[in-house]
Length: 200
Image (cartoon, rainbow, N blue to C red; front, side):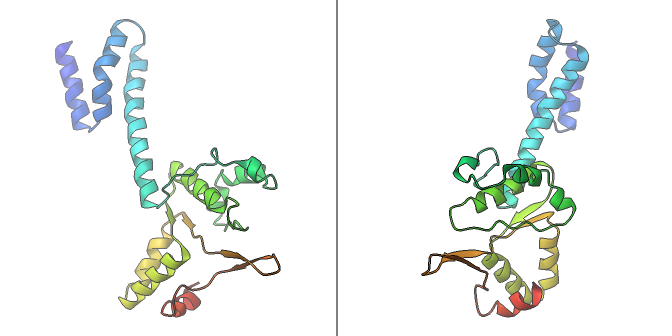
């Protein structure tokens, strides 16, 4: 039994499965006590490793996508926005709009949850294995302008195009003297204006 366990440990090391390695002795003890079957023991070890790797993948993807701090649909207070169609948001969470290459706009005055919902959909997409990236309009246009100056505009556009979901908070809401909300999206700098007008 010891020799067999050593072979299993060696295999786990070779396969780079550290979490399964950590759980091996406890799983074997449960197996010996008759608490689980052999197939359940295999399932337990693989599940431990899979959960650990998936958690690591999601964390790296969220940081790469600039989705920190993390927001989720479960943490969104729909009672705060009773006019919001909860079923429609739930439908968006199925991510069919990504598959269909559709654009989703969240419009409204500040403090209505637009950023929370956009980020939450991004988090949902990351968990589903989609590549996501978030950048403000200013960051996006400045990056494109900088890339153009260095002759790398096409490469930078391809970088953004690789994302299955690109989240861009580009709408600025402001209240006029009459109490109405207006929306505008402007280029962040004069140098970036040619990029803004020719690349969008």
